[in-house]
Image 1 (cartoon, rainbow, N blue to C red):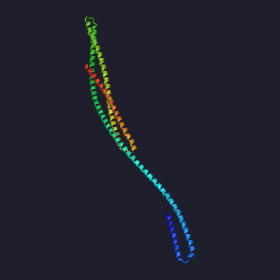
Image 2 (cartoon, helix red, strand yellow):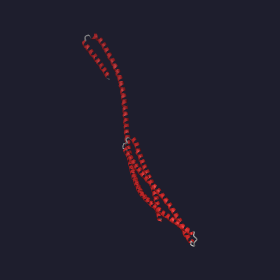
Image 3 (cartoon, rainbow, N blue to C red):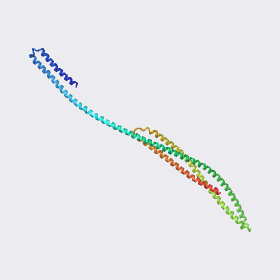
Image 4 (cartoon, helix red, strand yellow):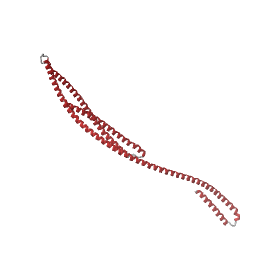
Length: 333
């Protein structure tokens, strides 16, 4: 645009200078006008032709520049329109992204609240299960203490009964020896031909019957004593194994409770560190799995304690039956 304005300005200045020169020459040479008219006219025509040629060139250049300006204006208009469309699309995308982000934040907050509710419920369940297990362990320990005291008392009674049975066996052996000597005496006396042989045979037969009955009773008492000793030994071994099992179960339960408390603490500390929504989904599945594993382990521990308690009840029933049988035998004696 600057060179076009310069060309137009130069053409105007040339025309103005030609006019000034023509007017000056006409004024200075008024007397010789007719003589120099042809030269001046020729010069003016030449100057005018040059100016017209320059003006035509400037006009052509101006037309080219106008075409270029129109093309540039059209290109700028198209680019501005395209940029406006892109800006509008970016605005729509931004609004959609903001809406999605707000929705994701809402879902995340709701999920966090749900996880907190599940965690609180699981915490209550674990605390209740732990308290119940502790009560069961305390009850089993108390029953085990009572069973141990009863076992000690039973061992003492068994030792006393064993000693009394040994004394009775010695007495029966002495009676057996005495009866044997009496039988021998009676047999020796029965070999003599006397009138009272029939009268003496009757006490002999009674003594023999009493001796056989005493031997049978002694054999039965020995068999019962051996059977009772075996039962008491087996019961002692079972109660010792049960006591060791209860101690082991208590230790494993204590270790499991500590492990569950540690896992619960880790789950509490790891839960607030969840960031974005995709990461929250993966971290949300972990505490749920841990809660299910904890609940499953607590149920398994409870079932094991129930099984141990059932075995203890069975052994206690056998112990009471054996004690009742021993008391009945003592009463019969």
